Image (spheres, rainbow, N blue to C red):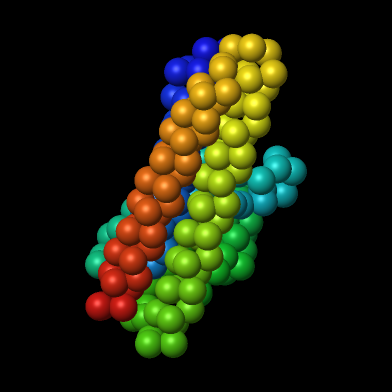
Length: 188
């Protein structure tokens, strides 16, 4: 195992954690209707006996500024989709029509904004845990490379320092995204 390749692998793992966080944030409601709000909701489809992402079972559009329209690819999944939206943490109340589901997006109350801010902080903490897990894997790899005589003791120290710098960088990046999303939620 090449140390440079492992550092790159660590960096990619940490970047993936940040990317996942940003994808999760797109589903946190800021008072505007956006298809991204529903795309990553897990839907248990009884007909297929499996859990699928919303974007794989339906098309989500925005016909009006405060309305989302969900059109299932398979009409038999309408009730499953409606249940998944209702049970999500988004506080939405879908209404099924004949071939689609209308999802009004209400104004956010002050209390709901605070709840969403807590949710954002929780998502951020989960992303930091993922980054720290990648850091641990990197540190373990350094020890293994030292044991396999790929790295010297100084080389191991340099490798671990590089992993720690990456960890600090990505944790700071996550903190910045959390602050930005909280401001976005609270200013509406």
